[in-house]
Image 1 (cartoon, one colour):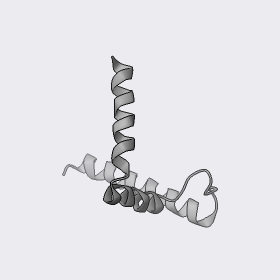
Image 2: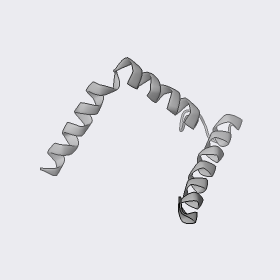
Image 3: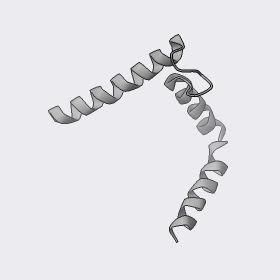
Length: 68
């Protein structure tokens, strides 16, 4: 991994960490943005239960139609 790639990864991880802290301490209202850790848990649950597939198909179909 190049030095530039490591720096980009560090910046992204840092920004996600700052967002997590801001959500947890109340700087960002949880009704506006949920903490990234809760997003990951919710995404995992959607994938495992299969509930994401119908919504994903619907969204990708709409995007495909928009390009046609």
